[in-house]
Image 1 (cartoon, helix red, strand yellow):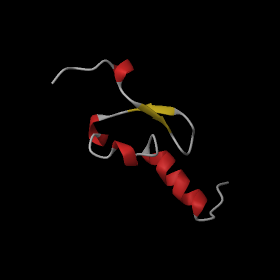
Image 2 (cartoon, helix red, strand yellow):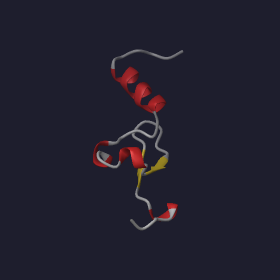
Image 3 (tube, one colour):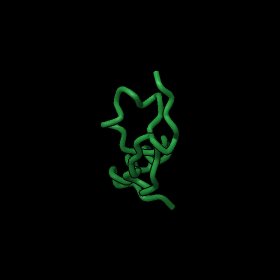
Image 4 (tube, helix red, strand yellow):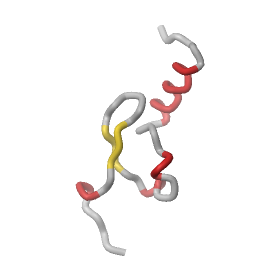
Length: 55
């Protein structure tokens, strides 16, 4: 398999924080379903949907 440069990897914008994040090997099989850049953004998104307020 040919190595890719980091600049050649696909990227997306996180739905919670809006920051760009790049493809990772662990997301190889489900890249189309990845929406968040981190577990923290994923949990923040779920808590904001359930109506909890953070103070």
